[in-house]
Length: 624
Image (cartoon, rainbow, N blue to C red; front, side, top):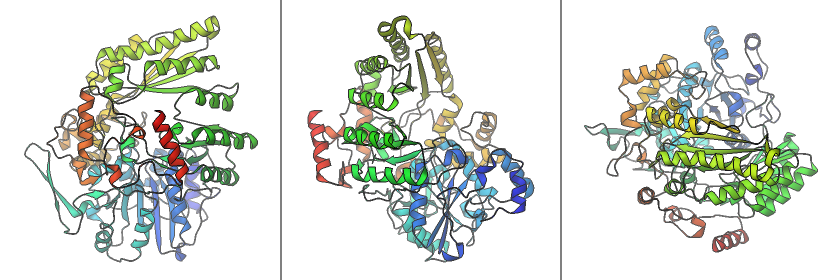
């Protein structure tokens, strides 16, 4: 489509106008008159961040392959663009056809981070769509949302018509096609509610106890499910994956070809939501992966390839795959990135081969400073593992080591924080022992994020540290890490507390989000845009407090707001894991034997496309 004169005039006044023009290589242009359903895939942040999200490329590809569906992209405009759009009366539009988003049949938001929720309200308002679902009529789009944050949908229940829970590859296309079958919003939502993975908040009334906790969900539509089961793609190898990715005109956060090797994780870290909600492990065959790589590189011209998974080297045939991909990339002068590696001897050999003389930083994520606390969180890594890997890295020439930890974890003491400082200092000593005076440029970067309890994890009942305690811990670490050769970074306390309020919120938290948006909160994850004073004002006016939602430890007897969602992981398993955490007892990787999470009642664990891969996993498990 052609940019009109008014938009052309606006774009000349804003930073990075290429964010708003569309027309990139491999973007899809259809005639809207030729399709039955128009879907706006909305990412509630700027273009550069949204275009780095692989899920957008996957779902955009799947929907647009169907001749009856047109999927177009929508991003949050930067503040300078929003200001001019509001002054000029220009509605938020899609990139493919510059169509105002209120003309879409469905607007689907991806929920990757709680601090983007005010952007969702702002985008709807800027697009002329009523912000609250109860105010929408038959001519308004259906507002849908999915992604990891949808596993607690309640804070957005007043604004979202339909939540898509779980894998969206098969479900989203079905839901889109169903939209053309029903002229009535109510009939359409009722039909969708019968599908696994679809939650319609309007079909449930929430009752509260006198103490403010959730008492029960009362169904307002008798055929609505008692709990909404997440949707699962059982065979990842046959699932659609894009090979003609859109190539942005401007730099994005991750500007590269990406292939998802497998989905899920077997390690069972107790703080990790992704490790729970993406179970079971499902792999793609090596040949499938290599074919996707060949096609992506041919169709995009990217100069970097990255593998996508929660733990890259846990792929059952990682060694063979890594060597094959390394050869393919070298032949095409493409760099290969292997994030989330288990840093063993093979991985170091691969990294050394990939990076040659240009050694970028290596990343380790011990998460906790002491072995006791690593056992509490079920992070099955020892200091011996860390130091052995560091020695190999230094001997092979790496000069930057990045360490990721969390503070505020359940059961944490200041001795555990001492452990963080000791690990960093010991790494400096290892470098000096190996390199002596030659190690002058060697640096250790320690980054600490604040623990946020998340839904459907063993730590969902845990309270979060109060801000004064988090600040004390940050200051404590700052003093102990004030050493030449060590850089210390930590996450902002206020943002983490807000994240916890929303992550563990009920429908009442929606009033907080709405009021914060009214007061002008946008891009709350961005330090330069975050307005803590406005969030505090919103809390004062709505009565939503961090004491109730963030800091409070919850009992097993309390009904949690997100229990309307069934993640297919059993509640009893999460309770057992939380109790084991209190005793610092570890649970083995489930490749070494089933740990009883309940997932195997619904889908085959370690699902692979062929028996040989399953046998390979079995051998790994047998060898420990």
